[in-house]
Length: 329
Length: 255
Ligand SMILES: Cc1cc2nc3c(=O)[nH]c(=O)nc-3n(C[C@H](O)[C@H](O)[C@H](O)COP(=O)(O)OP(=O)(O)OC[C@H]3O[C@@H](n4cnc5c(N)ncnc54)[C@H](O)[C@@H]3O)c2cc1C
Image (tube, rainbow over all chains, first blue to last red; front, side):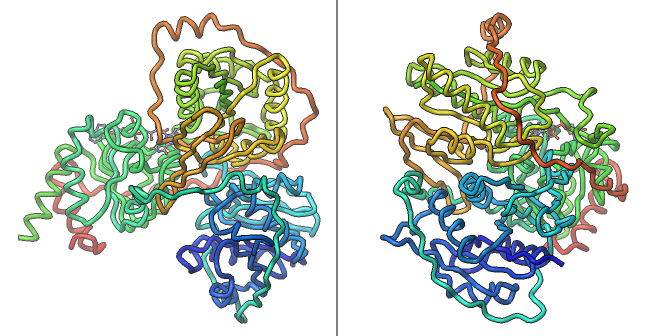
């Protein structure tokens, strides 16, 4: 049993605890004896109950000693808050979600504390209090690396879906403690000055869709997408594509699924003319059911799928659309 | 503005991967090699910036002399004066790589080339450490933004754009700075014939690493167990459509 105190950097969304932060808190509880949380740029008291339910005993609410420095995201300032919270809590383990901001802030913290950081950790393999071995995703999630962390403070970001969110055995509201953070002007040089909503995360619909119709090189051309988008519309779903499709300019990048695109977890994923390269698989493997449509019965996407239709997508997809329309009358 | 862009040779693993016997690396003997899509975008942005500002786009990698292939590819796309920090990269950690890049930046500065921007990929396709750019910025005492998909340079001011769940986050920061690039904001170009000719002739500056690496804490790599083949073939061609729709109805997604 670990004797560590863990500090979890929360990433609230719209005043509530995000799913990834709930996962980080659950993960921390399995890895440490006591869990503290840190909130920067949001009201700690509104999160205390939820954080407590997930096992945090203390929530530190960061406030800059001068001004409203935390009102906009500034990675170095957030890192300064984490360092202050490490001192206040005595934590020897710091966790954040493996999100763009989680990875960015902890990388700053690693530089400030002069310690190593492990990104996208899926489990703790062992911990003797001084040295900790973790498994983390490498090669886009196709392999795991066992990494040893030996510094006085171990830093890690938690990979998405590394654990199931689970309330604590004896949940209680966490105690809220204000945390004064003295900032250097240099910590605010890099700061979000504006957020342009214009195209509000174009990939949002894809990430939250219950059904995603995938399309790869097999579609053949930008003009070949009509039947694909029709199928997505008929099922009330979204279109997701392979990198071949975006690099050929057939569809915009925000539709790309994979290691360097979006990670999706729909109820049903229907990849059409996608071979199932590992970098694509990294983005779609959490789909509950996969139905592949491919001319090649040996394609990795077919062998990894739950269901498949072997054939030319330009014949199969229109036939499915026709059948859907027919049954609806 | 003079720009330095840092790339990494990684195995082009489309299918299953095999580990080396000691479990410390990927057996890449039968694989092609490439750079991450993030770095392809970084190279494109470096070349565009050099062109727009009348500066240069220098390309650098840390690795064995095999990586000269990736350096030459970048030269074919418009980069110049390729630099190889020659070292076996497998035992290096992110702090080592950042330190080695910083040394080159400082040495080139002594020679009269000051980089207004250093660009890297957001994360390497193989090790996925998500921190080399930030560590480099701290080494050099420069501001850094990660995950940038597009940016503009206006004199000494850089406006960088990061796609987030709420929209596009805009940062404004002074050069010299470090940016890590996320693919999606620009379309990488294809090499031209004169570009390829230039690449063949380019002289690679090879430098020795200046310090002993601290390492990456790697104990070993392991592969998750391969999922058993579970596929049920619903049919072939258009005649499978009724079976597909039956399934979609059963799954509750064909309203
Ligand atoms: C570092 C790195 C990151 C990457 N990130 C991503 C990523 O985020 N997302 C991603 O998708 N890729 C990514 N890739 C690229 C990836 O390796 C593959 O090249 C890509 O996914 C292949 O796309 P595809 O399946 O559309 O094309 P192919 O691999 O060419 O497959 C085409 C498939 O279509 C089938 N087909 C052809 N014609 C038909 C037809 N008429 N009807 C039905 N089936 C047909 C073929 O049998 C084949 O299976 C990355 C690569 C690297 C190196």
